Length: 116
Length: 116
DNA sequence: CCGCTATATCGACAATTGTCAATCTATGGG
DNA sequence: CCCATAGATTGACAATTGTCGATATAGCGG
Image 1 (spheres, rainbow over the protein chains, first blue to last red):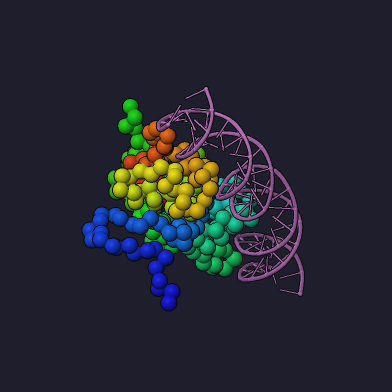
Image 2: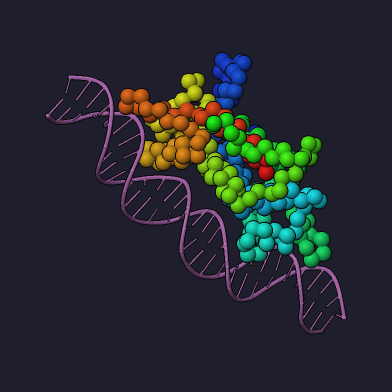
């Protein structure tokens, strides 16, 4: 019974309206905002960028601390936010933690903006 | 002279390099984050959505206050943030202020994420 | 088993942010 | 000329956020 739309369908008479969303509902807006909020910090953008630019597509915390000129706990904190937002995934190998992009996540966030 | 790209072409030698940016610099990250920060609030996403969904492509403050269930000063504040971020433009006609999307702005923000 | 190194977590703190009530400004009508 | 209305601005306040230092946890090497 949770299939009830938060978005009201409102397809009263519009059969071919090009992009006639009924405007974002409060719940959907909150979901979308959560990912965008994760992307709204310069340090986090740089973290994503570095991870993406890496040859292996991954980076460990020690590789990320220096170029950002931030403390290790701060970097760890930002990485956690990015993981929680579904943008990065964490894989621990030995003592090191390797972070890599979740495939399609950035594309989804990007598409979400266009779908407003 | 305003045709100069905000995105650097960077076609130095890479003819086919997939996406080998040298990772985002601090300054660029801050610029990108400013727009994304404007997009990182549910109320503002809904504002953009309503403006975009409107038949005329524009909406006045009075049309926006009610559906969001926010006070008029708060809506005005959010609109200002969106204007400052270059996402909306404001046009005053008579007593009313009409807000509309800046053409291409959402697309640029969307592309910025992919270009990380 | 002990220390060393890489990360995560915790607690604190200043800065920023979202919201509101009150007030100001400007435009139009009588 | 005065009032009503639309919207912006201001000031305040609670909540959130970015950062750091200190501490905890977990593997690895001896």
